[in-house]
Length: 110
Length: 359
Image 1 (cartoon, each protein chain N blue to C red):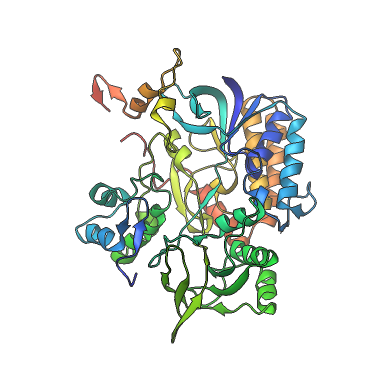
Image 2 (image 1 turned 180 degrees about the horizontal axis):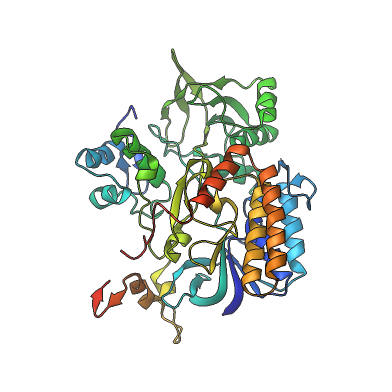
């Protein structure tokens, strides 16, 4: 990209320059870029910038797109009010299930 | 809530899967975040062809009506304005009506989550007035809102060509189609010729250098191969291609492969449209970006395969129907997309990404 000030993540206002800096420091995945810059951590949860970041990694490193893994996609799939997520159902707790992402085996994370 | 088949996404693929499962007496639930079924069909005013042989060619919104009419004959529960927020350890889907989250326990899940448009980044592309072609199409055809008066389109896929014509039909002036490659990306030359006949310039090997404006896009600089020109526009439609929507598959722990012809990362599936999670099936653009005929056919195959597993249809009958549908898919789908799909099926046992969800 010619102009390095171009916004890549519109939610968190992360520029092309910031993404490229992470890559020049060794970043090779979307999640590397995310952890260092907050790219993809806004309201859209990386729905817009995933492909743009993958393209920059591809351009800068020569890695093929199939070598750049998908970002981690967590629950909730799209934003939801905590009030709604913490539903008042007594038979079912949605909040607890956020922890389902971690599986325990003999008290340790598998 | 209990159901035999939970279908996530009520677009063309989800609806055709629902018809197959519900017509065999299964209890089917469709969940969609929109307030009506039909998905993108609702704003598609273009004639869709070729469609599978059981449908005559028709416009997108007409197909939506037809599919919705068909499911009315059967036992299909519609959860509109509902979203899937995730899946729980016991396998149930957490679905919200925006008031509460409730679990839906399904014997089989068919995910027809569709595709998302990709953006094209250039300086100031986040300004109002700059949107994807799909957003512009939704505004004019569904919401009856003019997104602007003077437009350019960045990209030249079939979708972009259709939208350009629809924008002109409602009185928007399309000033140029800007394409970074040396030729159009569209596979149907008919619409390209129509635009050329109407005098729309195609700028090849070109891109937007910068957008400018006070609070909204007013001007763009276009870098042509040997000069930079300035156009006054209040609408820029970006066509960055489309990619399958994957988050539901990711949460379900499905494996993924990379197939450029299908839109990049795609969940792995076999010829039953079954993912490597045996109770999860896939249909439509989520299984690879394609045209309407294949979207309906993959929905039908997924619906038949789920019905087979629930013993609503015999193995022999399901096998025979699948064979016929795959044959038709091979005829209707663009050659390169179909060969990408065949390669993708072959990679079922050796996915590129697996066990992503639990690290």
